[in-house]
Image (cartoon, rainbow, N blue to C red; front, side, top):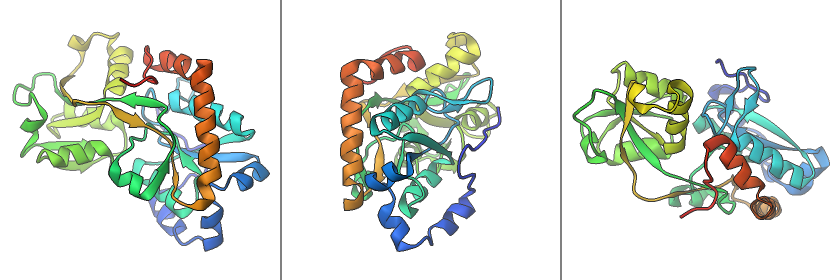
Length: 271
């Protein structure tokens, strides 16, 4: 289903243009007092990554991160306003002061932590290597050397492909990456394990043997998923409030309930 932007229908070109916003705008982005005064927190996400953020059969924005974002906004006492953009535009928007934060299965990495402040983790995830079902050449990430993968620009999955010697073609959505693997345009893609499981459940009634693609390998280790905000003293109060909200959602069991609703299991506990 075609994605429809609910707020700030910005192309990447417009986002680049928005990088010229005034210094005063940058200083107040992510400022809790400003958010409360305006009555809304602006949350960036892709809207095309089921079950994290996607559109249902009625073209309504939904998903685990959508509901988490709404719950956090409720705890802040404001409305959640969602901006749907491509992956790399999420970070451009935070940098330029367009978005207060992001809620889109963002993995905490050392590189990102140098540029953004992250909330405490609210979920934990693993990555899988996805290839065509009849592919007998790729069994591990080491087999990616000299091969071609496809992922969103700037994603950790694209970085993993490059790390193992693959040539990475950038693309906008999970659905497109799967299509490119299925059609043989690329050798593989790397993505979130639960996203792949959701794809199998929705498209093939949970039977991976019926799918045109398969998970050939899994990354060892668990990634922390958290909410990034611009690294600034201006955002410190917002980050504290978000952390408090996440803790309360965990303690009340609401976070676990949302996880089971969208993933079929609790991915909020870590390992």
